[in-house]
Length: 154
Length: 154
Image (spheres, rainbow over the protein chains, first blue to last red):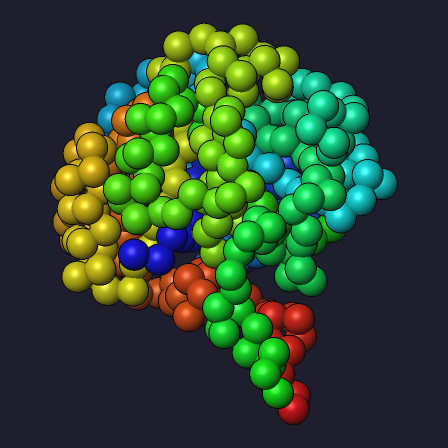
C-alpha cells in the first residue's frame, strides 16, 4: 500500500465566500471545478471546497456543529520571510488570526489562522523538513523512489 | 504564492493506538517521529499524529468536543480493486466503516471510514483524476511546471 493523501475536502457554508478567500490568498481554481465543488491543484494533491451539508450527506454522517476539528493543515514555507508573507496575505484575504507567527520551541517558526469556515491552517518554517522546487515536503529519512528523481542516475 | 499543503496533523486522544492503526493500514512511521508526535511520509507531504490537547494548546484554541469536522481526507486509488483493498485493510486495522465502497453519481467509486479518533477518510477511484507513479494527483487542467518534469526537454 502506497501511503497517499490525494485530496483534502473542506466543507464550507458559503462556497462563493470560501472560493473568494482561497483565490485571494493565492490559489487558482481548476477548470475541473463545478457549480457545487471547487478544486485547486497543490503539490501533487488537490484541495477541494464543497458544501458542508453536501459533504455530510455524501459521507452519510450528521452535519453537527464543529467544535474543535482536531485537524491542522500546514503550509510550510522556505523561510521566515515567506511564512510571514503567506500568513499576512491569508489575513488580508479574510482569514481569522489564531496565533501570530512566532519562534517555537522545536526550532522553527509558526502561526495559525482559521479560514472563513473555521478550518485551521498552520503556516510554518521548519528548517528540518526541506521542500523541493515543487513544494513537496520530505521527512529527513525519506528514501525517495526513482520516480521521484527520474534523472538522478543520468 | 505557490499553492501547497505540506503537512496534515491529526489530533488524537491515544497516540499509540493511532500510530498502531496507521501502521496496520500500511503507513511507515518516520525516524523523525518523537515521543509526542508521529510523522509519516506521503506523496510529497507528511501526515502527523499529535495529541489533540497538545494540538489545541499549540494552536491556542479550545479543545472542545468534535461534532462534524467538515473535512475529508481522500486516498485516491488507481482502480476499483485497489480502492476496495485499501478500504478493507483500513477496516481490518480498526477503522470504523462509515459508507461502504460504492459506485457514485459522478462516475467514480467511493467509500468513507473513520479512523480510531473519528477522522474521516474517503477512499475513491476517480477515472478523471489520474495519479502518477509517486501517487501524486493532478487535476485535468494542471500545467505542470518544468520542475515537475525536469527531463521533459532533454
